[in-house]
Image 1 (cartoon, rainbow, N blue to C red):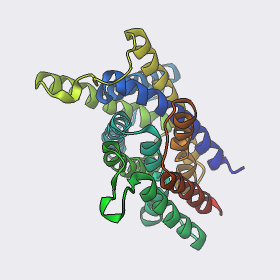
Image 2: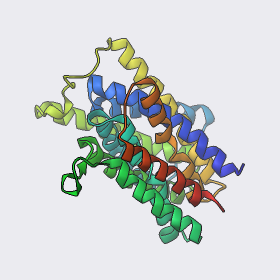
Image 3: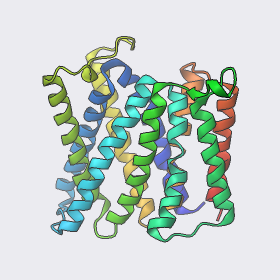
Amino acid sequence: MPFGLLTGLNAALAWGTLDVITALGSRVVGSLRVTAGMQFVTAAIFAVMVVISGTTLPVDPRSIGLAILLGVIGAGAYLSYFTGLQFGPIAVVSGVVAAFGGLTVVLSVLFRGESLTLLQAVGATIATVGVLLTGLAFEGGLRSVHFAGPGVAFAVIALVLFSLMAITTDIALETMTWLQVYSIARGVNASIGIVAIVALSLAGSRFVERPGDGPSWPRSRVIGAITIAGVLDVLGLIAFATGLESAPTWMVSLAASFGPAVTILVAVALLGERLRSVQWLGLAGIMIGMVAIAIQ
């Protein structure tokens, strides 16, 4: 198995498990709290790693700017995704976000000069169609076609931002190590999340209110879930960056995009969620498309 594929799959396993935890947590305390909490844990872990390893942060303005940009994009991506998981079915939202690997292939060709074969182009098309079938509900004819839930709109935003994260990370790794990149980026993520919570709370926004229909968890369970999610995020990021350092961006990203597939399997098998037949067909299209794209 190619090293890039292996590291991408490791990231997928970590992020797919993380998604289930954060989806449930978002329905207890809200997506903004979960996002900020998880990113604070992640930032703290990377900060400890910097201190223990004696790593020095970059001083080059371009490198610092790239890391900060990655942090801003990441903050938007995670918040969009977790908000989608809060308001929409986990299986459907995750299925849509899974297509970020296909979009990353296109961006890799356009901005990173990587090659794309005819088979990979066909695979990207199949995956795109699969996303449409997964994210749309067909009830009573074409005139009634609509998004399967409000979470899907947030999932589409997350899809684009996760693709931009992959490209930006690859560029940043040209001049920095993954620890330097993530120590800055995750610090920015956590700062944005904390500032957003404080600002929205002071403004009396309903966006920071706890969902009224979520499960009832004790505070200790919420903290534990957020901490575990942060640890899984760190493991996924390290696996992803390690793959990018020695393998094509499209290969690692495609493998990592199977993370939502892990989430879907857990949501359907353990949480009792159900998909329509056309959405199962869409998921199948995503999987077939991803496999076709990954063939060298």
